[in-house]
Length: 79
Image 1: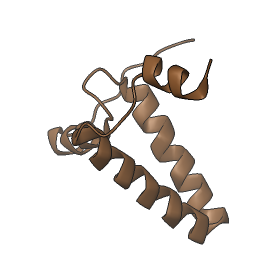
Image 2: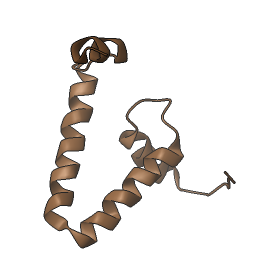
Image 3: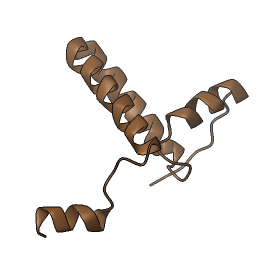
């Protein structure tokens, strides 16, 4: 994959940082999620609203430590 550098204001960078699921999440992935939501918002506004709300709930749960590790999920699913 080819890469490039873009300039954003510090304010924009701070807002992007807030959208990261974790500190190691690549900016490319964060921006791809934002673009996905933006494209879908035009086509299906109600679905997009639900998706954004679900993402926000998931981020809050993650911050509170309410998640399963991969190992736990595999054990629960029996795989």
